[in-house]
Length: 261
Length: 268
Image: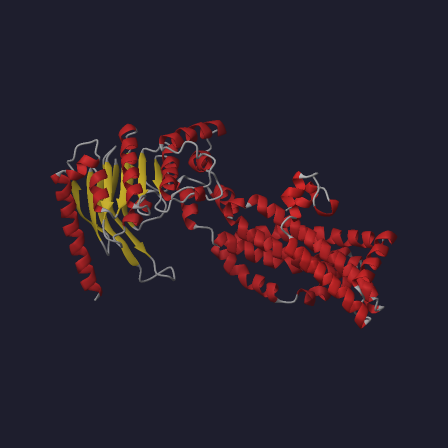
C-alpha cells in the first residue's frame, strides 16, 4: 500500500531561495495494492510533481510518503516510471531500451535479453527489436517505454500522462493494451492524465486535484466492472462520472481565469 | 553512368578499378572545381610570372623533389609526432574537464571564465612563457598545440553534456542508476554528436598550432621548413609545404569524421 500523509512540496525561486511556489499542499491519500488509481486535474495542480515524488526522483518539504510502511527516500526496485515523452535512448535499439532497467540493476546479460524479448513480444513489437526509436511511431515508442518499465517487474507502475502525446486512435489502442496487461500481471498503478475519458475508463478510483497549490479535491470510486472496453464507455455510470469530473474541472478553470484577470 | 562502367569490365573512368573509384562517385562537381582551380593557377602563374605565384606545376615539381630527397618525410614525421602527443593531451584533458563542467554546475562556474578567456586569447601569446617553462625542448611546441586545441574541446564537451535531455537522466535515475552508470550509459552516448563537433574543431586548430609553433619558436618540422624557404623567398617550396600541411589536415579530419560517422549514426 502506498501512503501519502500531509505531503507538501515547494519549488524554490530562481536564486534557490525565497518566494517559492507551493506546488503541493498537505496531500493525504492511499493507494491499495493492485489498485489502478488515475489522477486528474488542471495544469498546475502538481500531479506530475506528485508522481515524481512517489518515484523518489525529487525531494519534498513536508509530510510522509511510504510504501508498505517503508518511507520513500529515492528510487527503488519496487517502482518503475513510464514517462510522458517516452524518454527513450535515441542511440539504442528497441531491445536495448527495454533491457535498460535490468542492466542498470546488474542482471546478467542473458537474462536481460531474454526478459526484454518477452516484453517486446508482450507489447506487440516483435520484429522491431533492432529498430531505433526514431524509426518507430509515437505509439510504438511508448510501448517501448511501457515494456521497459514492466521489464524490471515492479510492483508499482507510475505513469505520467503516458498517452498524452499520442493521437486519439493510438491512445485508445494503448489504453486497451494497458488494461489487458494489467489484468494479467496485477500491479499497483498511479496514472496521471488530463483526459476525463481516460481517467474513468482505466481507474478503480479517480483522484481529482485542484491547482495552485495542488490539493486533493475528491477521490471518486469508479464502480464499472472489468474487463473494461468499448462497451464500458456506453454505460450511464461512465458518462455520469465523466460529466461530474467535467463540472468540477470546468469550475476550476473558470475560477482560474477570474483569478488571473 | 558509373554503374554501367562497373558492370562492364569492373573499371571506372580512366581505367581506375571500380572498387577504388566508388567513394568518389558523385564527386564530379568538387573534382571539376578543383581541376578548374589548378588550371587557373597554372595559367595565372605562367602569364603573370610573379615570384610569389609560381605555376602549379612548379609546386608539384618542388614537392616531388622534397619527397625524393626525404626532407619532407623526416620533417613531417617530427611534426606529426608533436601533433599526436599534443592532440592526445588535449583530447584526454578536454573530454574530462568538459564532462565535469557539463555535469556539475559548480565546476562550470569555477572554470568557465578561464576556459572562455583562454579560448578567445591568441594562443601564441603564451609561447614565450612555455619557452621559459620548458626551455629548448619538444614540450614547447606540444604545449602550443595543446593551447590551440584544448579549449574548444572543453567548451563543446561541456555544452554537449549540459544539454543532454534531462528526461533521459531522470529516466536512468528512476531505475536506480548511480552516477557512474548515468555518465557511461546516458551522458556519454547522448553527448557524442556535439563532442565530436568539438573534437573536429580541435583537430583543425591543433594542425594550426603545430605549424605556428614550429615556425615561430621550435624551428623543427614542416613549420621550420616553411619558415626557412619563406625567408629565402622560394615560393614554390613554401606552397609545396603548405600542400603537405593541407593533406595532413584533411587526413586528420577524415579520421575524426570516420570515427564520428561510426559512433553517431543514430543522430542523422
